[in-house]
Image 1 (cartoon, rainbow, N blue to C red):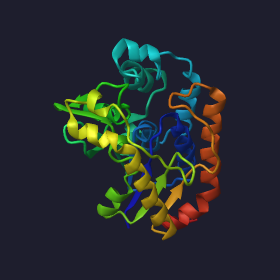
Image 2 (cartoon, rainbow, N blue to C red):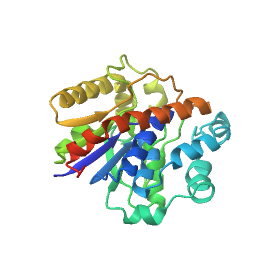
Image 3 (cartoon, rainbow, N blue to C red):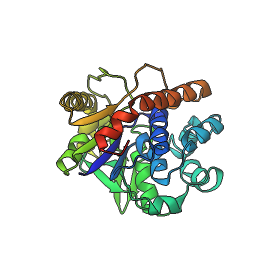
Image 4 (spheres, rainbow, N blue to C red):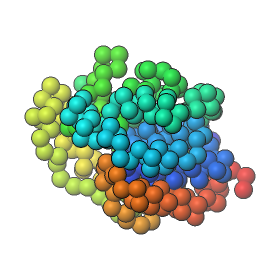
Amino acid sequence: MKSALILEGGGMRGLYTAGVLDVLMENNIETDVAVGVSAGALFGINYKSKQIGRVLRYNLKYADNKENLGIKSLLKTGDLMSKQFYFDDLPFKLDVMDTETYRTCKTEFYAVVTNLNTGLPEYKSIYDLESEECMEYLRASGSLPFVSKPVAVNGVPYLDGGVSDSIPVKHYIDEGYDKIIAVLTRPSGFRKSGEIHGTNIAYKKYPDFAKTLKNRNNDYSKQCDLVDDLEKDGKILVIRPTEHIKVKTTEKDRNVIQNMYALGVKDCTTKIQEIKSFLEVNI
């Protein structure tokens, strides 16, 4: 049996995922791999470092920080998400990551990124948080199109993994994982439609990426259809919001942040015995 935990992105909707992950950690539930997309990667690393409550704590504490997902960072650096604040100050000075626990945890962690040259997803091992390469892949996974500069790693430009593979269930089924838990950040039945405009202009240097981004909404809806079918057949287990909470991509309202996190805690707690049975964990 090979188990995978797949974490969808969605900006600050990822606080729902943080709540789910904290419940999994409290119940000592580990999978062979965990795979994060965009915010799912940025918040998901705490699952491997076993830092219960860290995501909620720093998001509440630094909600008003202008360097944290703010227009100040966008105007100053060209990136909505400040590299200095989010990938240096926060993890290594302000709310320190447990890098040693991360290294020794048996769960392997991957971040999904989109290659601008090919428009295709790549699945990068985040094996060490003190590795500059790993941190750059994490940054790329969470770098949203239009409001982020491409992140070059080993000469290859990358952006948000959600552009090319928002819910990488099929990839990990193809990789031989037969116990897959998908944590989504949208309620059941949510779909997107229509083409994304302006991609050919914004990314004229990267036509394959522009095409992938243009079709992203329709591709996302097809992935949701696949997830629903697999869930119906009992082939995967899905945890998704049971209520609709309106959350901005760069949400700063502490009440909304707290409520989204609390919903993740509630929904995962409700499903915890089902999760243990699915993974064949001793209850």
